[in-house]
Structures are given as C-alpha cells and as structure tokens.
Length: 225
Image (tube, rainbow, N blue to C red; front, side, top):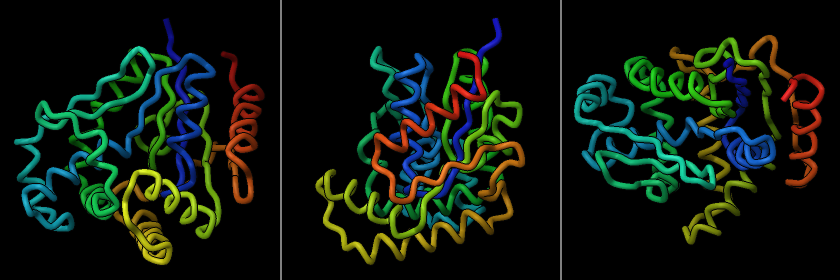
C-alpha cells in the first residue's frame, strides 16, 4: 500500500504545527512536528552547556542522544530524550535559539533524516518544518509553504508563550523571530525556501479557522484522500 504524504514548510510562527495537527486530525493522517526533533537536540546541548553554534561540540553530543517519537491514540506527538519525556520542556523560548543553532549543522540534519523518512514510509503523514518539501520528503504528494508577515507571526508566538505561563516581552519575541528567519534562510545546510512545486498559503490577517479552511481547500483541490 502506498502512503500519502503532505509537507508543510514555512518560517517560525507561521502556524505550521497548529494547522498541521488540525489537518491531520481531519484527514486521519499521522502528524509529525519535525521542529520538535531539532528542539530536542537543542535542549540536550542546552543541558550539557554546549554552544548550539559550535559545530564540533554539538556533533560530538550526537552519539549520546537517544530520541524517540511517540504518538498516542489521540495522534499527539511526544518527544523522549534518553527515555525522558521532554515535550513541554523543549517549548521554552530559550530552546528556540538552540534549535535554530543546531539545525544549521549538517551532521545534525543527517542524524535526524532517517527518523523523519521512516515514519513517512509507514503512515499517511503530515510533516511540518523548514525543509520537508525540499530535502526530507522531496517526493511528497502535496507541498504547502505556509507563511505570514513577521508582525503576525511574532504576535502568535508571543500569545502562545504567555499561554504556556512564560514571561516574555513582545519586542523580544519579535526580535528573536527576525534573527531566526535570517539564520534559517541563510544557513548552508538545507536553508528555508519554498519548493518549486509547493503551494503558497499566506495567513496574514486570517483567523485560525480561516487558515485551516484555506489549507483544507488546498488539500481537496490537489490530493485525493
């Protein structure tokens, strides 16, 4: 049996994870948040006191990292780092910087590539990240590039962090998002870019419901499910 795959790429704060989860639930697909995997590596670097931009030091950590991805009956993804559930811990704002740093390292991307592709071979899957349609699943049945302007994305991330009980300033979140955009777009290893055959979906000014309906419309137009 051939499994269907949907790749959703885009910058930080575009709503990829939220919308991909909703879409997966609607379609009965497995959802995979690839950013969570990089955050898990970033968290380990943080725990070990390693600079996330120190390529040699981060690469040396890989041999000690055990990553497991678990999906419950509800389809929600949980991350285990060396046997410990770190699903909530990796969402700390500080870990965003670490995830961005380690994700620019080719050895880290190669280390995690097989984990991502294996799930796509075993399930109907929706996978979101920065390079799913260009590198991880270049043969995906449908590719969507989800974006919004920086102000809108920063506002969404800011409100998300507040809901998680974190104390942050909006301008700090906005500044860090601009920095991450620049790093993601300019990194040598799998930079953030729209795949040539991806469909652009700009959600600036849209409510969650409007954005979801737009993605569902794209799926129905371009994929038989």
